[in-house]
Image 1 (cartoon, one colour):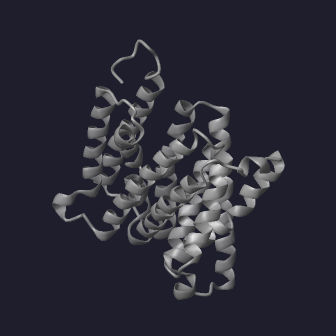
Image 2: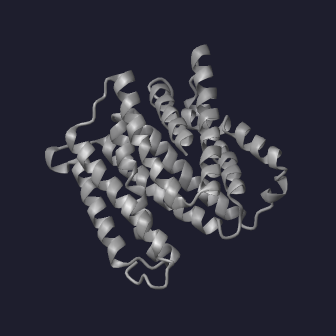
Length: 281
């Protein structure tokens, strides 16, 4: 999971760099298209082509629509604002997943987790700092991306009931490549030789990172694996500082600590909610 988190941070860095010269849709297309190679290698190595016969292909199309929306908005936020700030806002997604799981999945959320969600949203408000005019277009795009990501994760939970995880990854990669290819005739900018290399590496990094994440969740409980996701903020801060001299403001770091703590507490409560004696949620 540590390797996966680092690879995704490298991916975000490539996205921020490339989106300064190419349309976000084009960058998103190459991220998904070149990610197909490691995904297909995973299927071939496992001899798992049969798992691609899924029951709910329409669900996979919908997951791709929501996922592409989240990805495009997320990539755009990396372009519009400091990388660490955008990543910090993205950590709002677990809070939204908890809140949306009640109406969309019929799950029960107890008082403890609702309190953590509310505290987490306070952390988000500290990050975006609307009272000081910090509610910029980049912040709004990052918030929209976090909301779309939460919806995508809810959809994945629903698909997991009938389809294997690798099939979900495969169909997302295929459909998202198709969807992001549609506007390319109108937005295409021919990459330079060096940028072609970056685009290929970016896509491969995304696919390999997805593989390591999938393996991590298969080898260890979510309660052990998931907290490592938050290390992405450390990598994003480091890369943003080295490459673009971006240093997060104190209110961003303070708000991020609150959001991360809330997310970890929600994860802790979720690992206990299946115990019959735990009735607080």
